[in-house]
Length: 308
Ligand code: PMV
Image (cartoon, rainbow, N blue to C red; front, top):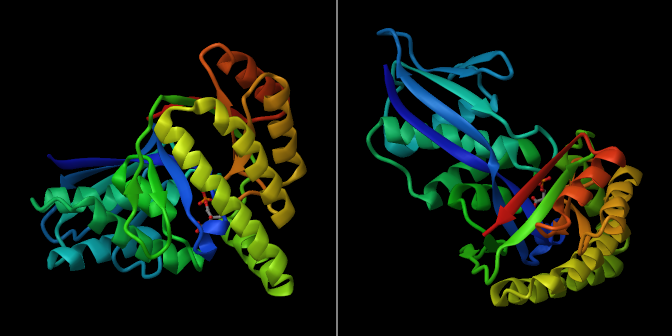
């Protein structure tokens, strides 16, 4: 018998990745075409909580200490002040893993939400975000908090570490083509390399982060005012700065170039970099051409999505 169902979307970072770890702002948005979901059913008496990650063919219980699914379930139950229930939770996701679309955070958010809903006390977005952040911290070192925030709130956000997230207004819808290099790239590695660079050449990296921050502020104003045309050049500039931080790769650069050549307004890597995704600003008229060009340039998957 089904007791509760919950889901959480994937996400893209529009502007500001990496610099956001160092206190600069970032803009991120949910991608509803891909999502994680969790379905709670009554289990056998005495079965305890069984977490079935269907795509990974994994079955996890609370005894699996250190497993991200066990961690988020434990945190959710503690938040609710509940002892272990006899439930089976089926978890599935269409969000590509380790590609910068927030798959881990979305699975955690869906599971936490499903447990709270099944308990009859749904969590606020703020609580979901805080719980997911705890798990991200255990597994990813020093996350800025942008992933859990945009996924838990399910709307575009302007995010700055240590400040309340601000959902931002979209003056006119924007359309993105998201191209996946197909290269799995753990965010932790890219973040660690940026840290090493920053320790070696602090002034240079701080200047790069400041330049990113200016782009984020301009982009926020352009998005709010519906001046979508201004975003392409800002994406190109942000990509250039990410290259200077050393987090792009030949594959990402190839997709970015291909999108621009096919008529995208601008393009940049999105997320941790090295592999994972890039995003290109498209219109209804250019979307198909850009998507085809991305596939021809080696993208494993292209998602065209409206933001806002
Ligand atoms: O790779 P993703 O999409 O999870 O994004 C990571 C974003 C970084 O700014 C590189 C790291 C962070 O914690 O914000």
